[in-house]
Image 1 (tube, rainbow, N blue to C red):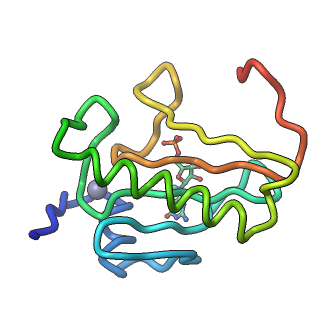
Image 2: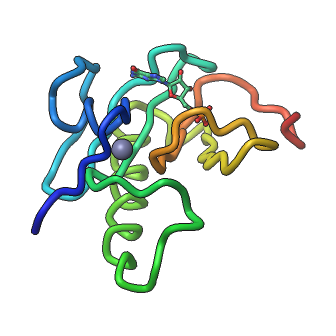
Length: 119
Ligand code: 5GP
Ligand code: ZN
């Protein structure tokens, strides 16, 4: 399967190994790494290797990929000690939600109290 690469995309560059990250997990479809500017004691990102701009660009053919992202989220959250206390998964989409990187990414945040509703 080819890996679509968007020139200038920072997360495509991380997936290609051109920009270093604190990698937590990788397989042929999915990558997980620590957020460079953590908003909680544990804060990592899970992304598809292939460039997908946001959830708005997913289609039914991506169902296995999305399932794998969720499996990786659960496994890493447990490995990093978040299972008992709980954690939050966030997918900012578009300008109002504060999406700053146009490559689909799932934030996983934990290790502190998380207020609700988010700002
Ligand atoms: P967004 O605001 O799009 O929902 O989240 C983008 C996230 O990517 C931010 O939390 C930001 O700190 C993180 N980020 C941006 N550039 C890099 C980078 O080069 N490396 C890593 N590890 N995280 C990054
Ligand atoms: Zn990308």
